[in-house]
Amino acid sequence: MLDFLQAVSDGVLFGATYALIGIGFTLVFGVMHKINMAYAAASIGAAYSGLLLLEVMAGAPPAAVFACAFLAGGLLGWVVYLACFHFIPLSHPLATLMSTVGMLLLIDEVVVHATDGMPQNYPAMFDDVMLHAGEFTLRGDLLLVFGVCVAAMACLLALLYRTRLGLATRAVSQQPIAAQLCGIQVAQVNAITFVITGLLGGLAGAMIGASVGTLSPLLSGPLTVKGLVVTVIGGLGSIPGAIVAGLLVGGFENVFQLYRGVTERDLYVMLLLFAFLVFRPGGIFAPRGGRD
Amino acid sequence: MSAMLEVRDLVTAYGKIEALRGVSLEVQAGSITCLLGPNGAGKTTLMMTIAGILRPRAGSVRFAGREIARRPPHEIVGAGVALVPENRLVFPGMSVRENLYAGAYLRRDGEIEADLERLFERFPRLRERAGQDAGTLSGGEQQMLAVARSLMSRPKLLLMDEPSLGLAPLVVEEIFRIVADLHRDGTTIFLVEQNAHMALRVAHHFYLIEQGRITFSGDPGSLAEDEVIRRAYLGSARR
Image: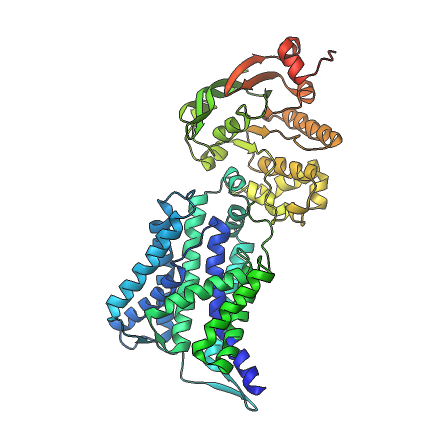
């Protein structure tokens, strides 16, 4: 029983990173009704660029590495927008899907070439801190990952619901023609959405690197799938859905990792997705007031 | 009176299909001008082209002497032209108040709150529902919200695309009362309407559009005289 609780709590804490990745997919989908397949790869890529800082400045503190990953994520988000969306006819349903898949492969290849395909150590946030409650343990680094992700989500929600930019973003996602009639520039909002989701992705990538301890380009494939699973389970376009589903998937997979081992783990995540697609295809929170 | 809006030989196409095939018309400053026409004649296309959502293939649109054709929508709103779109297109998941703030998106002046208050005076129902999601409003309330939202940009010219569409007769009465009120307060109005009876009571000038071309232009008197229009839009009854 204790093992079970331990697995759930570790999984839920780590699941906050899935929630961030899910938010990135869902936000872009909400605003543009497009899937950005390059998102998880760009997030991992951004985490890698945090390591670049250690190259130039050996001994840089972990916080600086994370900040670097965060900013690189925003920059990459903008690059992905320009390369895969801005000049491509959005009316064609498959065009941006293909351009973002291409970008996913490109980012992975760049990382493989830059690192000779070797996994890289990622700095931990601090030396191991464990909080004990009887035999139950909370990993300090996972708690911090959770805290950082929750803070990032809170900032995002404040941005969306308390600022002029957030108003414009929600307007574009709910009714793009009316948004234009109000004087909101849709292309600008789209670009900013990519930068914001990129920042979140860079942060998520760095948090994953820090809590796993290493980064490998092999991460981006599974993370893409997890992000999409979280998005579907949460309900396409729903931010609260992505948060809940991220934590759910994190806890769920860790329980199965405990009982069935890491090799079978993702199988059960896929079964969870299957169950949702059959019994609740709209996800936990079907978004209200989206397009059509 | 001078022309506030001048449309010349406007052509707008969807692919190879020309929805507007050389439309020319004028809206005089301080007037209510009404565009009649059957479904598919190009009424909404014309409104969307003037508002900058659609790019015309040829022709010109001049507003207060300035060319606005092919300008992006935010510049056109900024110049003082606002469109109340067909089917209202409110932001369903945003509160009534947020919808109104969205209408004032381009404004940077300090009078937004005062304007909001004035609109709440004009539309008391919106004040009652200020915190409610716009998607939960009735059709008539959504129409009022759509009108109020476009007024938040302080337009000089208000374009209205079938504001009475799908509304109950009493609500239609109310919408037309609002149109008359707005006009009295100095807003120039260019209205698309199928309900010719109602339009006859408020409008000063009429155009008829058919298959992408203007086929009639005249004042209410000559509209009521026109045999074809009378049969198609006013029924046979003649007052």
